[in-house]
Image (cartoon, rainbow, N blue to C red):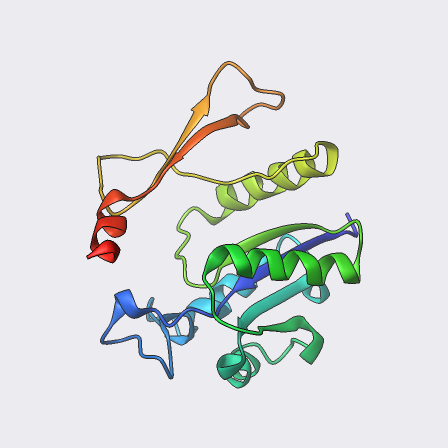
Length: 188
């Protein structure tokens, strides 16, 4: 559809990937996979299979504007949204929503991180297409999750209601369970 967009979050400093990731060149701008492309380039190319390049936006900190241009020269200046301040994910998503709504009041969009490695790309893109179709029909937010293979305090969990399923594979969220270890470390 013509109102589908992707916003790639690329404003983080990648502090958990130190020492490779530094404030001046965080992990999204590194060739972590050894394939000659940075994570942000791989992410951008992945989403070109879902929407036209004019519908891909990068949300970043103003200090990374030039790095984004260097890594993604096909983008116009209007496609690089520089946050007024660095405030984590929720304000980034809200800022992006306001910007895309101003551009297209019917915008139906995906917000994704710039630094994830997706090994099963076709399956991932199929799920995103299903999510876009769902949100085009229903007034809803969709979050993707993967089934855990083991307990891990490094991740949060999504509890969902299995009985309610308007579309195959899409469930109503009952609760988000935050990563308790991270919260405890930050409160010290």
